[in-house]
Length: 231
Ligand code: SF4
Image (cartoon, rainbow, N blue to C red; front, side):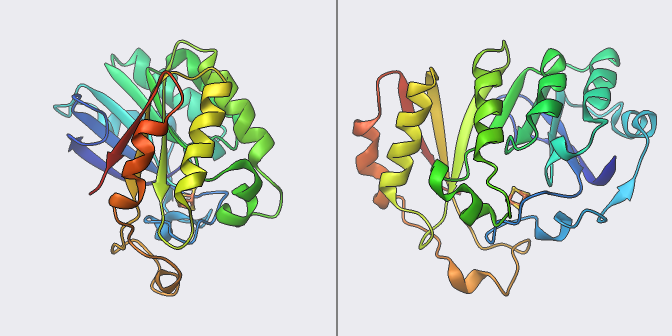
């Protein structure tokens, strides 16, 4: 699979667990607000075999791994990497995904502890916001159902982007998660212009105010707590 980089230890990617972060390269979406835009191209990063990846991240003083990207599930050998990390004695293993490749996600589930799941939009705006030709929503929905029916902790989150999204859409996503049987925390993080965002794109977006969403906290469906994490 193609690898962009590693972070030896991160204290912010998985709650309360120091993890080593593995960034895979390449993504099958093209969100305008992407903060890792340089690793969207499918030929970005470097090809590495599984054993070399495991060797590279072994012996860090972390308690597990966070595998992120790009979109890790576009790589067919992702389940083999996660299995190899597990067999190498990994503690917690977390995957970040937007869920557009459910067949690969399904093969990863036996070896995972948790998944940060990027809910990009309300269903009817998925193709528009992720800027892909074919609507990814049916595949994303299948991934959500797979996760809810699994033993893996499902952590849905949305990057809220000013000028692109509306507060009512966050409520719609929360209601949808409720209808699908999810109970737990739904995390909203703010879009931030950063060194990883494309200069040509930032004119279209705004860093949103937390106050725009605060009134939603009391409107959540039963069993779902809205957490606003402004960075
Ligand atoms: S899915 Fe994630 S990595 Fe891919 S373009 Fe969108 S924000 Fe970037």
